[in-house]
Amino acid sequence: MFGEGFPRASGRARFVPTWPTPPDETLDADYPTVLTTGRQLEHWHTGSMTRRARVLDNLEPSAVATLNPVELERLGIAAGEPLSITTRRGQITLATRADPLTPAGMVFVPFCYAEAAANLLTNPALDPVGKIPEFKYAACYLTKPKASAMPESPPVATA
Image (tube, rainbow, N blue to C red; front, side):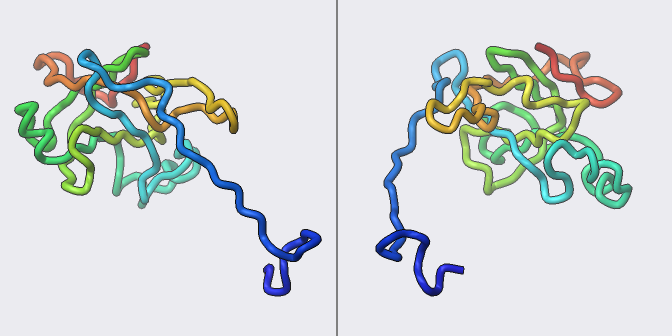
């Protein structure tokens, strides 16, 4: 696209350095774990289209909390068992999935499940430059729920 130069008087690109800023909400003794949200291979955005595709929804029919096996062991939870994730904005209880590629100290929850609305838990603070909400990061704490806390039907986030 720019094989013959950039649309500038010099024809050269202009690079502007940027420095990452820390998240608005930091970890502390009460909320020591990072909650991050994102897409799954089978479902993206809000799932408004992919969750209607039977073959994709059969592959990933419900939200799960993905953690490093070390974190699951620390919590005394086996993969598949329920986990309660609590932030300053609410709580959600999901079945767990072990993934050694998920960093220790972090839990991943997909945001495409309306019945498990992970973004209700995240921080709506805006980036000071881009004005983008900080939906992909929140401080949380994780607990093994009481036996009655895991719903029979799909999970529901509470605020």
